[in-house]
Image (cartoon, rainbow, N blue to C red; front, side, top):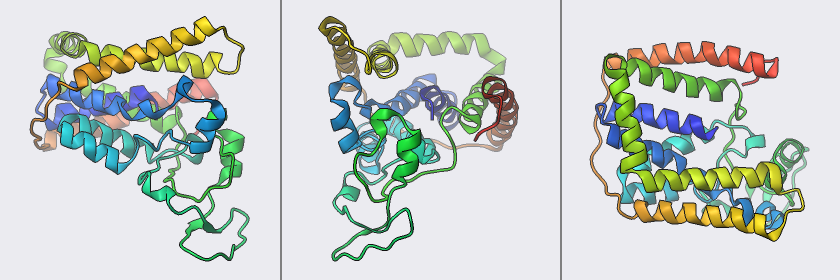
Length: 290
């Protein structure tokens, strides 16, 4: 799912669980931004990136999520929410390798994508990863250079299409409805919390992602000067330093419960989010793809 979707849903869930505590909700939102730091961007060569397939694996597994939860329960909740959403995404988006790195210990599989059964000794996975679909539809850096077993969990939904935008809009609408009585004050408090109290980690995340996306989308397939490449690397390293600096100082408080009114608001938000996202996707793509 899109990063904005992960963060919006995490904020909404944080507000529900922690009784409108903006500080804790923002921490959950920050946690939801962490897993996509495993996109290697400029730090590795494309062939190495493709060979090891660390995106949606390195920071998208239960072991990493549990480690973050032990460090800070609110950040950990955000990580789990992020992983949960990405579990719904398609092979093109690479789903989630939930049990990385344990899943990679076994490299063989029994049934290939054409239905042929491979006879081999030892422990093996059941199915081959659908690499022909993946290699035709995914980003260049996420293509599989060798046949792999089906160790990732895939869902039916495409990144940045109807369901993705529905979750984003529903979460955003829910927050506005939930805070309707003090909406302006809430936004002031939210901005102050996100960009003052958690300034370093939020700015670090923004710098890392913006520089990384500029490289991934615009520069990686062009001939760029060393100074440009060095600038991108420098910005991303500064971002990581800021993330680690403030992240080191975060601590771990307690979790709470949901009530029926929240459920009603969630249902209304989902319905309105569906309608808005339906028209958004229809206008943008001229068709509806989940």
